Amino acid sequence: MEIYGKREKYDTPCFSFRKNPEGKITIIPKGKPDMDYFSMAEMEEMARLVEIYADEFVTSEDMSKASHSEIPVMDNFSLL
Image 1 (cartoon, helix red, strand yellow):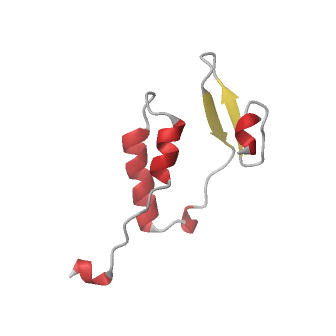
Image 2 (tube, one colour):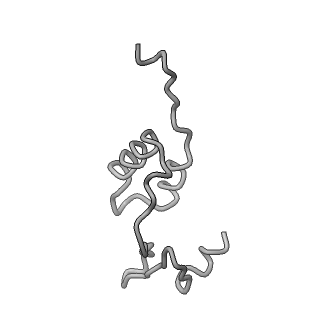
């Protein structure tokens, strides 16, 4: 994507990138997300991904692949 090639200087009203002394890039949010946009299943999946992947040894590529995997859909009958 275009933003990754320019990320050291990329700055938007929503986020910016910051490079630390070790050369790692961190995304800096500039506000709070509208959580009403997400379903409960999506919020639970995001929490699960943070628990699993929020570690220094996990790459952004690993996290991106995991975050784009399909979220299982529960039907009404599975609750009976």
